[in-house]
Image 1: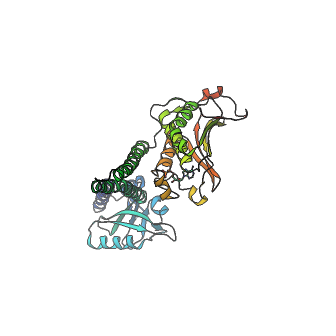
Image 2 (image 1 turned 60 degrees about the vertical axis):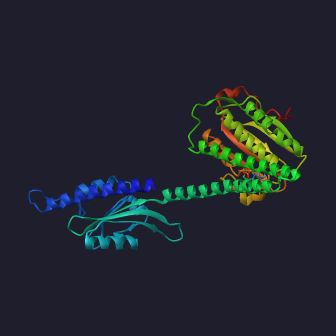
Image 3 (image 1 turned 60 degrees about the horizontal axis):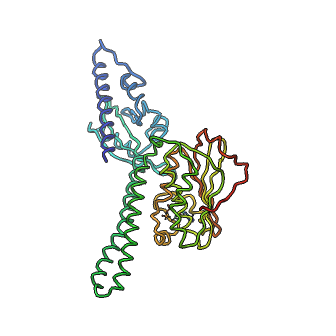
Length: 390
Ligand code: ADP
């Protein structure tokens, strides 16, 4: 809202400036000693101010003919030839011409089947000759960002409400079952489960909010990918054991990148966590480092799990997107793991990719710019070895 107010303020300032110039020009027109400077009917001073505006600016005369239109106004389809083609804008301009009152509105402009664009419009009279100035600031991106933020807040509230609701219910149940130690133990266990879930969501939200700016890592350090992989695998071992899932490390050793080691460990750990969560028992997860080309390294995590339907592949990196929400919750997933990995990759000027086949498994890859000193790494042409993680 603050941004909208600032925009409206800026538009107001420009309208004022342009109107003042127009009034001065029309005053000069009434004195023979100061002949009016006109550009196709528009006072010269006004024309040059309009030409530097980023917002769409249109001047129309008393017959609704466009005397001047900025390139943005034409690009957005507000003007065609010498006509203002958006009916609501034309109606506003006519009202302003009639009563001289400045008008402001937010309008949606739809062309054909394309999604509409939103504009903050300000229409003002210019001098006394029936000229009207229309300024339209494109609000589409601002509105989109606002909608994304609203959705995000709604999702966060929902994700927090569920475990908090469960905790409150369980605590009441424990109170009622005070005389039954077995039931108390059972419900206390479920309370622990819900608190872990709550902690995970909050922790992931904190991580995500730190990453969201998209700026590169502030103080990058030399990071050995071997250390990243070993650390991530170590931290996932406890989760793999109950399902008897083997964690193996393979590929090319000695690669280094510039970045934030802890963030890269978090990213790889999220891949491995998912690989374990979405794989059946007694399967294998392989974490591989490789030199993709002269300038890039890749860390990939391959599982023999349930895989991902093709239709969902494009969306799994979105915040809170889950192929099977019930399964994700059951496995303790927050729906934020892959969004965190994507942001972590962006911060390292890298990218993430996924290959998957339903019923066969998935490979998630993070690709990172190599440090040139990685030239010492063993070449990729060497057969990739796969070692069981110790
Ligand atoms: P979650 O916490 O739900 O796992 P993520 O952001 O880590 O959230 O992943 C988003 C969704 O992508 C998951 O809910 C799951 O449906 C799918 N997914 C991620 N990794 C895998 C995998 N290795 N195998 C199958 N599905 C996966």
